Amino acid sequence: MVSNLTDDTRRAADFFASEIDRLISRPVRLMEVCGTHTVAIFKAGIRQLLPLHVDLVSGPGCPVCVTANDYLDTAIAYCRQDDVIIATFGDMLRVPGSSSSLQAEKATGADIRIVYSPLDSLDIAAANPNKKIIFLGIGFETTAPTAAAAVLAAEQAGLANFYILSAHKLVPPALRALLTAAEVQVDGLLLPGHVSAIIGEAPYSFLVDEFGVPAVIAGFTPLDILQAVYMLAQQIGAGAASLQNQYSRVVRPAGNPAARQVLDRVYGGADAAWRGIGVIPGSGLGMRPEYRRFDALAALPVNVEETREAVGCRCGEVLRGVVRPTDCALFGAACVPEAPVGSCMVSVEGTCAAWYKYGGGRWQYEG
Amino acid sequence: MCLAVPAKIIDRVDMLATVDISGVTRKISLMLLPEAQVGDFVLVHAGFAIQTIDEEEAAKTLELLKELAGYGE
Image (cartoon, rainbow over all chains, first blue to last red; front, side, top):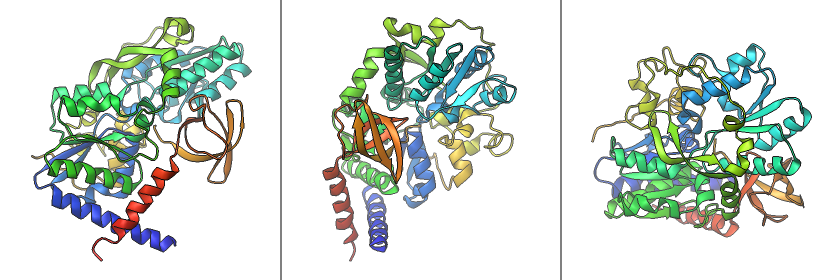
């Protein structure tokens, strides 16, 4: 049975690839805006499988990568305080701030703990009543509700020493900013499956209505992604633009209303700074006044060093899909996964890291 | 970051579920998916169930692959 499934998969992949070639007759650039897609695409060699005139480029879909330097500097300033424990997802550890990283601080004695879930930080808070536990809240709509739920759980548990340093971001406003800036031609969008599992389809309608860009919500297996590209190709071939959902086994049209309710209870809309893009109106989340005592920035004032960017790093342009990693003079030389300069090389989901690890193959920007 | 893994709910007490993830048992929160039931397949992200996996839709995807496998024969 397994070999049959493998054969079926191979045949389906052949079908998608040849149909994509048949349907698209001009050079097109398709953008994915999800770090998990980035890794899946590189790992499976999907770029190399597609016809020469179909380019897949990565947009600002890696939450670690788009986190601005001053956020890291703030986290580092907090971790240097004796009564603070930082709780964070592991991929934030090596991201360089202006002059240090959490990993370097941990090596010199800062109490920084890697957690799998925001709820794990509540256990740390309960076990360390004399410490302030600051959870580093980064991530898109998939992750933000988990942080909001942790706030509600902390409130219910009566924990007075749990805080979030929040830099959650929203995908649709970033897409709007990218398409409005029009630095690169985007002929189709692969939309992030698990963000969509929360927000549903409606927040993306402007992509089609205002920008006329074909868009497909995609799952994460190689065949999911190929099928989604095929669905984009069908639209492009027909000169049409619509919003389609390839990942219907997980993404409901209305998303997950219960998760959004939890999110909305704790957070309201806010502007947010994206690395490489700048401040995008309404693209972030700010804690509502009734929950502000859980907001690290509001509850725990801190002095942060002046933020500066790494000289020569082109992460910002990579994140906007304007240049490829190899256009950066640091890539593979001064900037490698073991000693990253920019965030795109730090996160396993970063475009530079994926390119370095799996090889970029061809990736044209002409046309 | 947005990685989520499929899991089967094997027990539930209030908002805490025990799930089986490829043979490994874990506790997860159902705060973001309160209607989930024992026996459901769910996607787990950062310790929370975030959505149920629709078995009918999953079956449709498999059907499509079988159809496509007939392509070119």
